Image (cartoon, rainbow, N blue to C red; front, side):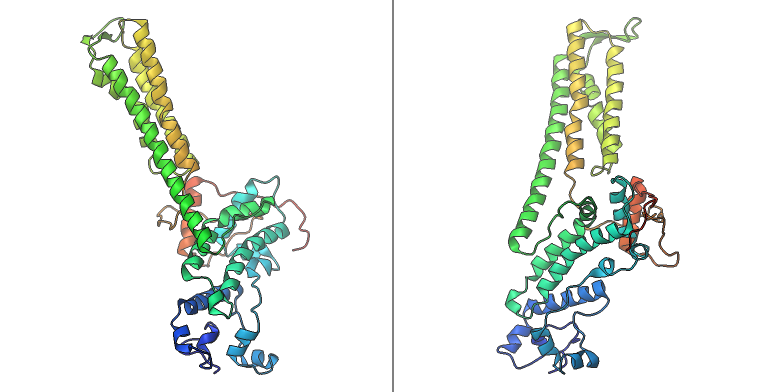
Length: 382
């Protein structure tokens, strides 16, 4: 048969194109059919055409073979992607704001702006990872195709690691893999769980140290005779231990409030650090204005205050350093800035930006990390 049964022959698996195979009905009910079709659609999006030319002219070049025979007797050409086949990679990036942002950020860490041909080679190397996944799905034998879950997890890794792999490729480093297979997917899930558990454990330890130190200091200073302020006291009497504990918790509270929702970013870490220092400054000022019964008491309190300021830092570092790649981006209402490409080109004004593009650009605007690089190098032939 030349046409697909209930589908488009350009995207249909070979078993959907003929009845002359053993167990045809059972084969068509296999999820492997959908794996083949999905990979064919992604191939079309990546290359601009389907994996096989099944037009009259294309079949004529294959001696008039049917679509089934073409797909089982010939291998699809490995996709090159828009970057690998581009005559001018700058023109491609002008319509890919997310990729342009990733390239801009990676290029800013290099010594000098990379030449266009180097950027094209780097992006093409990353695209080859996607091509490997697609080609594994387009084999004619059902039993050799990966499972749908494996493909989904490999594509999720490819997407989550894309910007990092662009940077790695530009630096000439090995790429982070996104292999197919249950073992690789299980390992990736295990790493995510480990990172999440580590963050929770460090956060809990930081909070426990801060709270424990504050409570201990409060118990030790309970009902200690003090005067406030020192010199010309307006109040004197037994110190409430709860007041000391509350003062020593100011650094932790300041760190959490100042950081807010920016727990996964370096900007959030800096804000949390400044909040902890501010809370410690306020607590230290209150301690210095209080007349304590002896220097040993005040020295112990300053030691407890130092611990209170330092205690939130491991949690802040863990939240930033062990941040998990987002599985999905939340929509943002932040104003969007047009990305500035490494060579000064900008996306077309009249091109509609996709939701994913808007989210990437909004994130870039928030972190103020869109870099403008000048291409002062000679273009060595793209």
